[in-house]
Image 1 (cartoon, rainbow, N blue to C red):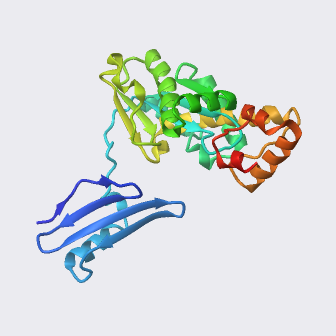
Image 2 (image 1 turned 90 degrees about the vertical axis):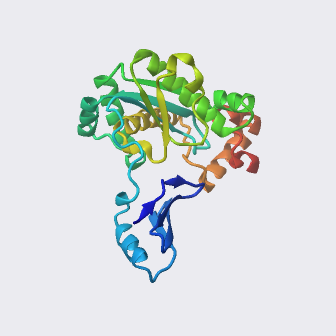
Image 3 (image 1 turned 180 degrees about the vertical axis):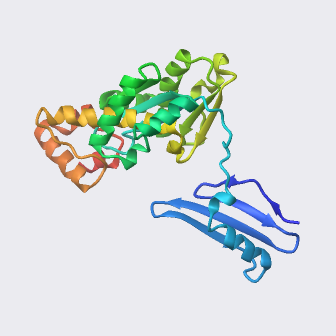
Amino acid sequence: MVSVSPVEEKKYNFEITVDDTENKLKIQVYFGKKGVKQVVQGNKNSSLFEKVSSLISEPENLFKDKNEGIADEYIGSDESGKGDFFGPLVVAAFYTTAEISKRLKTLGVKDSKELSDSAIMEIAQKLKESFPENFEIFELTPEQYNKEYDSIGKNLNKLLTFAHSRAVEKLLDKHPAVKYVITDKFSSKSLDILTEPRFAKVKFIQETKAEKYPGVAAASILAREKVVLWFRNLEQKGIYLPKGASAAVDKTAEELARKYGKDNLYRICKTHFKNFSKI
């Protein structure tokens, strides 16, 4: 008889232990930039090893979605701008049902990281026109971000928890019957609204790669649109800022510091980034 342990989430991977009393195997799954990698540890000469090795060529057989069968009605949330030195941090929350999720797919909704800026702008506009009561957006401009980051103890995860909570809270007040909230996982800490009595019946779920849920993907697009608009508004004023935190960002930051003074950059950048200390 073969026994399989529950999926255990580690810091860098997921693990499962498979035991047939004669042999015990450990299966480790890593999700990296180059894709999914599976590692099987144990007796390579055993029949169990052979069976498991054939199974992990289709990892969904072993790693079922722990939220499979979740209610069709839920709120999804995601953030954008977290990795950009310049620009705001934006969190969006989106309320969806089974029927709405079908419509989201017809609009081209998917993980915002897979879409160009022009596609983001187009789909976000359709979302806002089609579902005006189904979303909330919480934005921290760079200046607000820096103040909040300092006041919250200079902890990015706490800041993300605060921002996600504000967006989700506003949308839950609009749709109080919702029982599930799915957030793209950024830490092990729960949203700070979890303890509020009025949300006692709501199940808060944090999951990596949660953009697979249409509601989270829609939220990711709405959040990214705000970030794109922030950059485009500056471009209209003749200020062109690169996204991300690359060497090109360092060069631009140094040029702006020479022109306007380093102390004035807090209005357009996140000052706790290493890019700021390099100036």
